[in-house]
Image (cartoon, rainbow, N blue to C red; front, top):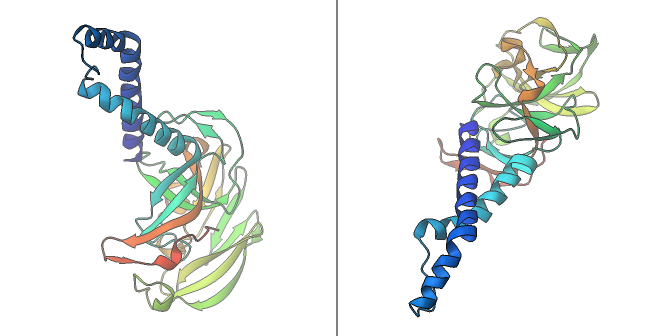
Length: 266
């Protein structure tokens, strides 16, 4: 859906810009001359030209902002609880990993690379029309091991400490399962919270991340569809790094949490 909107935005911007340009070069002078001949104060613009002249600057601004700087996304699932909740509206930094052309997603300027611990938005490798958000755990060349709900990066265990039950007073718009336990995990000096469920099994495995790819996991470890299931994320699928929450509202429950507005994402 995101790709369709990007394509629509590009097409509308190009169309309105072309109409405005052709009118300025070919037709505007004729209308002005006709107005003088007919002794009217102002030549009437066709509706399509009037709308194009008005909309083109707005569409161009939105296209540039959304394609190269920041883009909003909505969190539809609980795979990143407790870091992100269902109904969070987030802002994604699009230029932190380099500038890409819209629609074709071709990188034209390299500015940085994804780092271990980043919360990243990417096009789902199984279906690139769907956007996913997860935490980046493995870089190219890393060996990632997940065993008995313990994470190992290149043989080194990620430090983890328990922070107690994840209870309803910590999230206003949903009721966590009674077996949900919150932990603080540190990967490459990036400390973040994760959620584990006592009655869920561990999806054990070991993966070697190939060149040009990344390994991602949800912070809600037992409720996340991630690289443990479908493999690695190609570098070209990376869209940006999630940096902040600008609103929270869950339409399915008619509930919002204003306290989350302005929170950073770590």
